[in-house]
Length: 113
Image 1 (cartoon, helix red, strand yellow):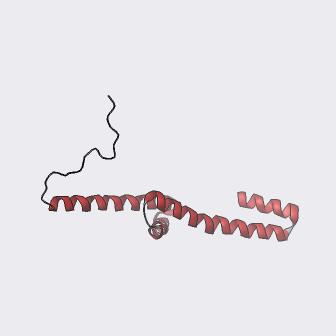
Image 2 (cartoon, one colour):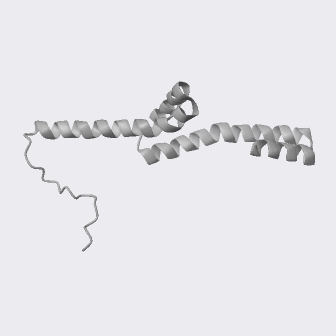
Image 3 (cartoon, helix red, strand yellow):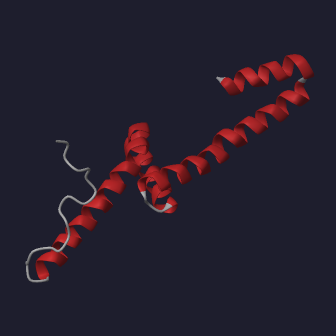
């Protein structure tokens, strides 16, 4: 709607040439730049590669529409995290199953008293 409004305003104030230029600019920004920027930001937030993010969004959109495109990147990030946790748990069990030297409370704030 914002693109249509800006195009109509450009048509009314500067004529059809300005309206066409405005329409092209809006289409480029909304379809190209926004896709690239959102893929980069989402990839950084979810700690996945941008190509994996883009591919999962395309596959999710093809299989489940808008909902699939929206939820595909978090689902892939979750699946990759679960796999990494399972791999590290398997490596720990193959090391002899002894006690970890790591503190189980790492990453958690100390309890309040």
